Amino acid sequence: MEYNININSTRLNVEKIKEDSYVLVFQDSRRKWLVRPKETPKLHTHLGVIDLSSIVGKDYGCSLKTNTGSEVLILKPTIEDIMMKFARRTQVIYPKDISYIALKCSIHGGSRVIEAGTGSGAATAYLSFLVGESGTVFTYDVRSEFQQLARKNLEKFGLASNVVFKEGDVRQGIDVKDADAALIDIPEPWLAVDHLKVSLVKCGIASFITPTYNQAEKLVERMKETGFADIETVEILLRRIDVKLGATRPHTRMIGHTAYITFGRNA
Image (tube, rainbow, N blue to C red):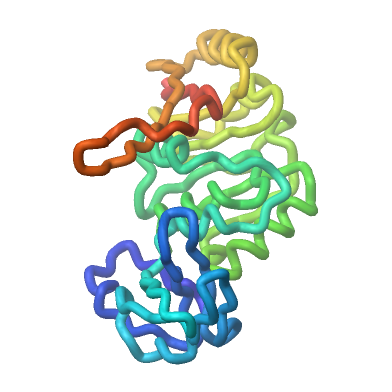
């Protein structure tokens, strides 16, 4: 059973839970489980045993008690819940970064997007979710084992049908044309810049992930030489706030530096 993401649907809140539906069993922000009643009719946790077979036919948002009396909520998982639960062998692009990339690149239903550095497929999943049935994600990786893992992750949640998996090195060439946007997360991304000039439509937007200042510098210089416009590099920091009456304060830990993100328009 697919996750059946439909970005045009306005009635997801009335969907009934089925045996093969994914549900998010939620106790708090640290204790939550992404499961299906069919595969896990009895979920064993530190809170006790949760009888997931009893939620079939109910609405998302219902509550359930464990055999020890603890209460959990049964929520409909979001695309973020799914991405962060992927089996992974590589670091993933964090939600704080990928969401900003999607906004800056104007990725929407029907977009054609090039991705390089498939990894475990977390970013691929979000891109698939955004472009919908009418769009396509072309994802490249030089390692077949990563592509196989990503394909398995996406197929598990019904997000692979609009994704074209390509084993290859975009630093050597890109065989996709007329793409609206690109997300490049590879070593030496400056070597892909010339190929992106040909593969992106005019005014198409390229985004790049780099972990160090030196890489960002080299990338931006190449983008300027190649004629990209509106070049910008940013870093996104995300800090949670612990909200308690009379004691609200920043959380002691935060997701700080994860990457430098560079954008440019194909002029």
